[in-house]
Length: 234
Image (cartoon, rainbow, N blue to C red):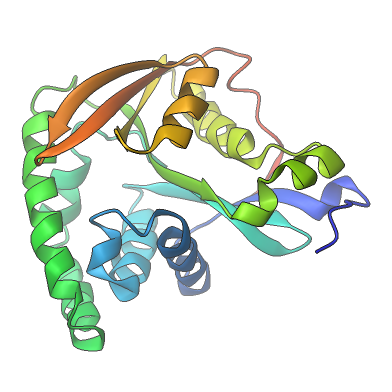
């Protein structure tokens, strides 16, 4: 692929509104980049119809897609309701969640294993949420960039560090709400992401979630970190 960008319009961050086309794109990116997670195990249909359509439309979660030359390059999903996110997602929309889940299992019976893993994780997260401060509480739920858009040749040729742009976009949103810290939960084995957050100045604490060694990221929000690229709301 050609790495040269002819103008600034070749790169953009596009805020999404929960429409099905964008939801499908987000689901594909999620599976390609963080397919090891428990939510990914629920299947593409659940991700698209419930997570990236229903929850975004209801304002419980937000997401943006990074595009290079009009092609999806990465994504970020985030919420200002980390203290109650998992609880509200299921309890507020049980029929939507059940419908999307049933469709995923019918489409791919292997998703039933993901259901069991996700239930265990959500139960653990609900316990964790009881210890969090009240909402608004900022969390980057997940993000990722396709390999061809984060290799050294691409970064050297374009000057684009898309991972940083995605995180900056979420941080900028939280800053506008008056929040001073953003958190994230990362598997202990995900060393590249842990190194990335540490480079941004985050503190990292160890804990166990649903039997999985994990790390709690705490990133202070500063004006420098919150200075994001222009966003296309279309």
